[in-house]
Image (cartoon, rainbow, N blue to C red; front, side, top):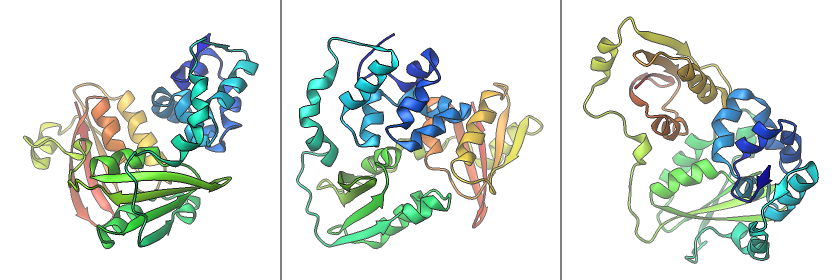
Length: 271
């Protein structure tokens, strides 16, 4: 199989599942790819270049590992971009960020506890001024989160001050447009009660409130794979799962929700 920096991880795994060990040698977080459901969710979206960025290494380091494993490399492989690796790893925007009034948020303890730090980050952003800079301290670049925040009007840059540590700086963009991510918009023409009534007797109910991250999202996506097209999935959740919503949109699912109380949200997912 011939590969390039743009080759999806899913294609590598389909060719030889043992390649997961090679990918995991770059970053241990990729061991999650051994989980079949996580593999279906992550691998089709992550390219070799993406994996290298998350792992904090030049693309060609990963390409070389894969070549040693037995893959052929395209002549046009973008290895020349490695000369720009440091710049690309330390910034994602051409705009020079202010980095004034820096406020730190270390999410490593949150992740160690098996909790998604999304809510903590969003809550922190609500408490700071537009002129402040939030510095998220993590062990990897939180790409899904950054994609959501970019749509909400934030600029970001990442730095790697030392091995295993990633600083992500977040600032309100100069345009300062408050936009709710398109993926976070429920079905407007149908109310929760209408959908609940429509699918009465045709819903599979699950409860993900006691599951550790990322199993709520994984469980929901797994259930949807086996759901009949004319049925709906009724989910008992703690909160609206922000990372899940873009996945639902990509799979052409619609959803409505009803927050009963703090820590108790009902989510109905349907075609």
